[in-house]
Every structure is written in structure tokens, then in C-alpha cells.
Image (cartoon, rainbow, N blue to C red; front, side, top):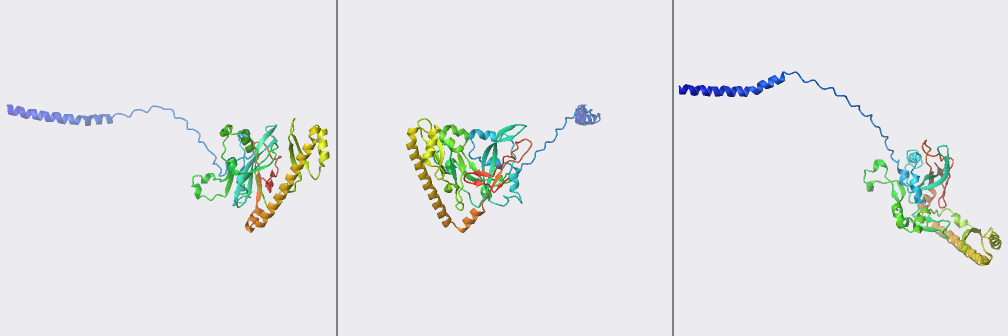
Length: 347
């Protein structure tokens, strides 16, 4: 009996084990027979409109990278209030353009002009880019001059924190600069506006009186032919400022006219005349030295350098007219500055 009972208990345990192992499979089958749950209705989100960005032009920021020499510091921010378009400058570097395939040096300047804008006449500071086609830098100096200064100052560019640096077009900015053979050089300035408050006012003003300097020994300088001198005579009341031409003006009569106009007192007449004579002597001496220096430079000049000076070309670029910028077409002028004279072409 016990033997049979034992056998029965073992069989019973096997049957329960089989039943328990088959239970999950039955459950899986039952679950798989249920119909799928109905998906909830979810409102589809509207897809945003695709945004399109116009590709940047390769030389688009060229005019902004060129430092506007001689512009007053408080005018610099206003210079970029308009979206000026210099596509004419960009096109000049394309095939068929006046600057294509040439070594070019660029500097900036500004011209305040009364121009029409938004049905009104406004004085606008117009940005200008001057391009010099030359195999070598046209100059490494700056001219500093103003009405208040008695004499002109010619200083190295680096003294004014300026220098010619290579311009890297947008498509090449991921390349190593030292491996690029740039054909475009721009006049750059490392002086920052934020540092001006630490400088003396005389130093700050020098930046505003700067002019890019150029000297062509093959061309006679206008100063060599000039017979005029700037006179700034110190006086107890106010300084006497005038221009005296030693070929056209007679000193005695010139002085009497100033006294008659009450610009000069009678008791200062002799001192004024001596002052003018001294300035005339200085000017004549400077003109003579300039002629001799130019003659010597021409004599010592190599044929290659001579041809380079002869082939130099100056181009003056104004902004292109657009609907959202002032129209400057009526104020274009070929004059660059007293050193460069006139541009060969205005664009």
C-alpha cells in the first residue's frame, strides 16, 4: 500500500509540474487571440515651412574688412547702419573685371554728402573703397595733416597701428592661411575704440586726420610746384590763419589788408611780416629738397620698379544703389586724396 501510495504521489507531482509549465503558453495563446486595441485619434502637427538662406557671396564682407581711414571714431557705427552693397567691387575680381587676376591693395575712406533718401535730403557718411593695382604695397606710411597743425606729418603705418594684411575670401577661410597665396591685401587697423578713452586727445585726433600716403617719384608732386604757404600766426587775441602766395601776393599790401579787416593789430605788423618770410623760406627749401630727392630716386630706380609705377592703377568704388540704401550716384568724384590725386576709374 505504501509502495503504491508513493508511486501515486510521484505521478501526481509530475502532472502538476506539466500543468504549471504549460500555463504560460496557454496564456500567450489567449492574449494573442484578443483583437488589437484601436489607436487613439491624434491630431497631426503642422509641419513648419522650410527656411531658405541665400548663400553668402565669396567677397561679401570685403568692404567691411577694409578700415575707413580718417573717419571720426563716433561716425564708425553709423557707417554700418545701412546694408551697403559693394557687388561692383566683388564683380571687379571676377573674370573680365578690372581687378581680375591682379595683385590689389585696398583701403577705405568716407565722404559725408547730402543725398536723397526716403523722400528727404540727408547728410550721409558714405563708405568708399579705393583699390590700387600694384605688384608691391603702394606705401608703408600715413600722412597726418589738419587745419590746426602747422606742419604735415608723415609717419610709418605701424605707428598708427595700421598695416597691409591679406584678405581671405569666405570659401578659403577653412584653409591654412600660410598656404594661401593671397592677391588681395587690405589696410587694417588694430586700434580698438574701447581703448581710446585711455589715449590723449592729440593721439585720438591723429587717427581722424590720417590719410593714406603715396609718393610716385615719376610724377612731380603738386607741393613741389606750389608757391603757397599756410600761415598760422600766434596772436594775443586769436591766431591769424591765412594762405600767402609768394608769387601772387605782395607782403606789405597783404599785411595791411589783414589790419584793415581787424584780423591783425597794427603793433603786430612787423612780427607778422617776419613770420611770413620765415615760412616762405622754409617752403622754398622744402620744395627744392623734394625735387632733388625725386630726381635722385628716379636715377637710382630699376627698370622693373619704373614699369611698376607706370602700370599702377587706382580705382574708386562707391556703393551700388539698392532700394534700402541712399542713392549716391550724383555725388561720385574721382578725387581720392592729396597724395593719390584722382582715380583712373570710378565705379
